[in-house]
Length: 244
Image 1 (cartoon, rainbow, N blue to C red):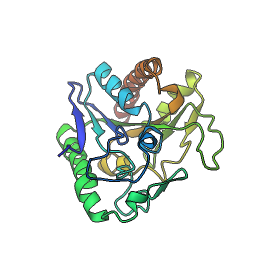
Image 2 (spheres, rainbow, N blue to C red):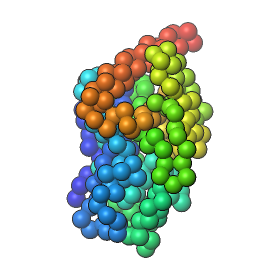
Image 3 (cartoon, one colour):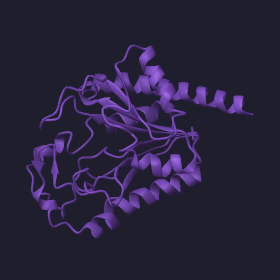
Image 4 (cartoon, rainbow, N blue to C red):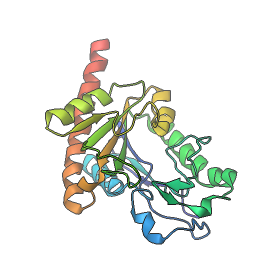
């Protein structure tokens, strides 16, 4: 059986990288009832997020955890009781194979092991910063409007890492969304559970997927996110020093 996540090890254990939507993989015994090419779209995977997470982890020599199942099988970035945990429709595309899915079985097989792995890792590693890497489509197919942001920073109540991250991108001229293209007050399940609940500064980084769907884009954003991580290390350290 495929493990719930791919784990990349690294020596710089003050940072942990996460990628909930890294994979488009669907187990052979799960029939979603969709055309296979739909899995290559943003509804099946966060385009570019997996390669980007691997690149940043390698550059920083930092640990990373990447999910191994498509978000159409189960959305790991949702609470277990969320209506869209097992999506019946995504951006106008029906997922008929999910209509009669055994919710408890999907949670037990995919969702619970993934989050148990994250919880155990956070407990053992004790990172000082958690960054979650995602991507978003420039425009939804069904009734969407253009999303002008090149990068968005999502966060809930704890903004210790998020606000410096927003400033970082704005100072470099990137069109940056503050809790855009959607709000971390509503969609922040993984970081709420594994970062904020443990008092660990965190931010979800959403990059517009047309910027990272090719190798050169991934390489450029790998360097940028590695620079961001080091910048956040410094700003968080200054904050701790000032509080002492």
